[in-house]
Length: 422
Ligand code: EPZ
Image (cartoon, rainbow, N blue to C red; front, side, top):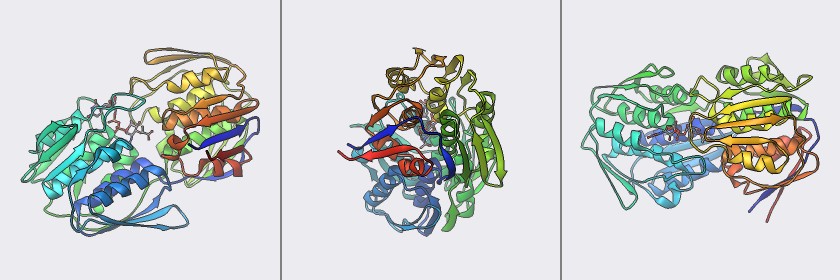
């Protein structure tokens, strides 16, 4: 299992290209199942989860190809026919986002057999709202042997209210509704930029969607959808991670190919904490450490609030802030696993349920640590960059799922980091 070996204490300097958003590319790939025509996706990040989604499409009998381009990969998908509408446990357990094929398969082919994702390190991660929403659209669904068995002669538009805001739940139902008869209204829908990017793709395919980006999305179903070409939005979480990297190492970075409008809450919070972040052009952000890092509380919220996917990275920064900060995680029930590893590096963090108190500033010392999930891994990399001495991070396959060649990008910025193959 690959490891990262990091020698900390080197401020990061230079320009870093931000890749396409994994969490926009995954639903976009699933959306290609809604048409028999060719869908071309550009700026797709070169990360493990994209490969897993391609394997899933292959399992379904759907052809896809990847071409290396200057900005990310170009992925072409043509779901002319289906071998079998089944997403097996072996693939779904690798990547929960596999659930995103459920809505398209039921809408296009009238049936689907998708493994229940099961939980993961950060929480139980139920998909009950995906299922309830599809039932509201007329699908008959039952669970057996760990699989979601769904059937629908044809889906009929309806009104569905999410009792909890769900990003992939919104995406799944928006895709299913696009081919349903009549109007669907999704209430308490997720407002994330990735939802909007998916709606943009569906509209280019011929779907009729209004309100994406708000908490009420209206979809007028159509009989069929066509092919198109579509560009994946920049990864706002990768960008936020590099903003923290500049602050925690006392460095100075320019992020290229970023959409700062997707990062308002993160930019505001990091600025409050003392970072200096400015727009350096239409798709550029300049970030440098201020003269101190201030302890500032944060509460994660659904978009446009402070992203839960930035919480672990922010916690690493708060270990270097003077004073105590309270971090409240409102989205997932167990998303503080990184706190235990940061403590092993010298941080002073007390976790109590969904709240963590970080007492800074503590100097971090390099240690052997273990990644538990994608964003916890990023947090440990950031801590390793700031720590004195060597940090060895195990199970970096977690980070490879969502960050494109992060050790290469960091090395180019002056970080002493390399991958240890074992
Ligand atoms: C998406 O996961 C992202 N993944 C996650 O990013 C992100 O952390 C999360 O949204 C929140 O922003 C992708 O987009 C592929 P949710 P998702 O459904 O859709 C509860 C990363 O690091 N819920 O918005 O699975 C759920 O338990 C990953 O890239 C139900 O109760 O998250 C959670 O408490 C990690 N029933 C809350 O809603 C459901 O049917 C939000 O979950 C669905 C969700």
